[in-house]
Image 1 (cartoon, rainbow, N blue to C red):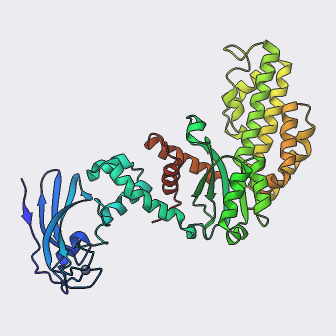
Image 2 (image 1 turned 120 degrees about the horizontal axis):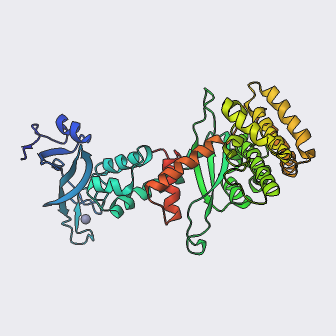
Length: 439
Ligand SMILES: [Zn+2]
């Protein structure tokens, strides 16, 4: 079943039809007919007649009639939408002119030689950016191939990515690495990428993390090169640079961001503490029983308890922990390591930043002298990072959490696309999903 309606108005160049305007949002384009079938809507459009000169020589050209150009438009509900544009063709009458024939163009409707309307392209990019859509899914809804859509989306994303104004106003910068593929690096290049994230707080103090860029490699050089490319103005504007405990990035910050305060990420420091407890537990387990933990061993099954914050343990869990520790004198080491990790957590959890800083100072003053080797090693690491470690307490809890959250977004986008083979495409898609490109 289908019905056809056309435009009631008599369109002229000076008096556009308002009904057509409502349908397409393009006042100059006239809707001749709308046909609605169950899964397909066909809209026939044209431009009103106008006198046309040859674009090369300017001589008034006689019309050569029209040709049908079929365009893919934004879906209407579940139905695909085809726009049939009765596109005018002219021929230059001037014998000496090389032009020959030329066709009508409406850049606001569709780019020359594109098969997808400009507004469908905008729609598709919006779906990719905000709705976790995939190129394959959008191509299906538009009724085009994956490639037909991507070849139009890609230059648009490239244009947005090349716009340096998207780096303006960044005062707080996070850096982190992630692995983007597990294939052979000889074929696909380095597995690690360094990601830069805008962690600037808004007027209410909230961070709206924005992925600014992804560059190949996990090294000092990767970060230095990127910072250099941003220019003096950008670098001078950065007041806070958050990072994970990786010396290469720290060195890049010291080198390129002289005015910035480097802040060691709280989450990662706490993780280092938890890792120490794990190590000590495994070593003591091995020393006391001669094998790895198994059912029935006192230290087996308390891993989760040891990783949790003391304030979150139930009475039952606390009793289990006490039983495990008391089962053997040697287990005392595990308990001490756990208490050290809790001290580290408590410093970050302190309501009052000055109080938190005092606790952190105490960690710095004591851990490295601990008779437990693993704790002493952590103490030495923290002393090496002393300034960046303490900066958390003087920067109003600056941290790299936004960068970690970004990794979650990247992970999801990569899964939706079932992986990527091309790093440039990967970068563009992740920048779009990560809020780094705003149309
Ligand atoms: Zn001509």
